[in-house]
Image (tube, helix red, strand yellow):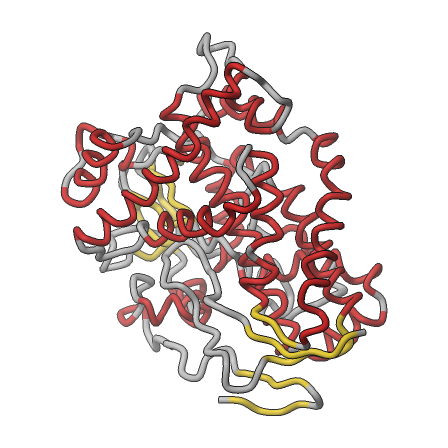
Length: 435
């Protein structure tokens, strides 16, 4: 359903979003709900802030203050994931594990899946690799790449923004830091796509085999890079991760841990999320011509807040899981020890108790950066400073070079990949006039 407003084609949030009328109708384990989960989030926040999803058995948390509490209370909430208990795997998880054993490396526990003290010990390696000076030094590279990418399509008057800009900007940056060749970005993109498609619900054995074998291809691409950097450190971020010893462990990360870091913490965490935020931002601007006009008028004043509002509203990471370390009482519901908790950051980011007019872009919002898009507490996203730079320069290059734009008529369905944790547009075709 489309309507014309000025020179911008507007498309409704979704023609027919799933809008449950009661908690009894609610679930998040449904592709159509995930396509536009916000009505379901609204219902759960008000009527069932602790909701046991009947399809997954997980306890879904949707209020901002509860989510902040979960992120900061490491005594009661664990980042441990059942998939790391290799001795207890069954079904598709066991199938994937055996494939890794036979053909590649069983991924170790990622940074995001660890609790203190191991998390703190391992994170020090990342903190050094992502130290402020190193990120500051990347700023000219991010800026220049953003303007080059826009320059590649600006004379065409149209583009697929996802493929031609949102994917290559963060992926090229992370490739440079992780020892991968820039010309391999589309192969790496296939691997990261396969990884997060492999995290979906209800996968067949064939789908699990495909996703796992794609990840094993990536492992065999990066393994020689690990081995070279052990012999010839080169000062890159990956070189630091390969060679820095964790004092309490008496060793650096091993191959299995490095492969988990490369796929989960670095390439998915460090590129997919920024890609999805860039795409979401342009989609939101197309739907909100008044916001576009204000950005064009004074980007220096409004652009940083716009970046935060994009992450808040569209939350590239919709949620992550925790495990209850003990029985927990919350809003009259007992969450039993060992239960899996779905910390739904995207729902908290639209909580009216924290954000006035939570479904709207507000370029004057004073607390925009208090969103949970990068999590909070000890597991706060260590790549957030780089992601913010990429978003800023990505949108700045677009604003500086484009006078007016619209969604290309008849070419967009604005659908997202069906994924429980990540929110990613399939494509975003736009038409524009050059500034």
